[in-house]
Image (cartoon, rainbow, N blue to C red; front, side, top):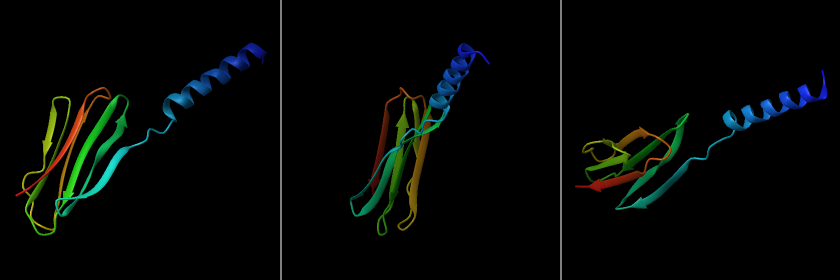
Length: 104
């Protein structure tokens, strides 16, 4: 193979590896709040697709979790003590995200 062809192939392999092989870190937190544990964050779900999630566990009170990304919203509904309230929604990478929890 000629040197130019080898360089082009090497460049193409590098571009593909960087585009599809690079890990995207999840932005997440787990905090103790309101007497329960709240896990929330965002993660990659595919090409230009981001997921936001909110999970809340309270062992003694009725509770819920909700989240939104762009115009898409999700609500777990009120959940019994000891069960995890879970919500998630998908949108585009540029969309703003919000995550919430609530206690009754």
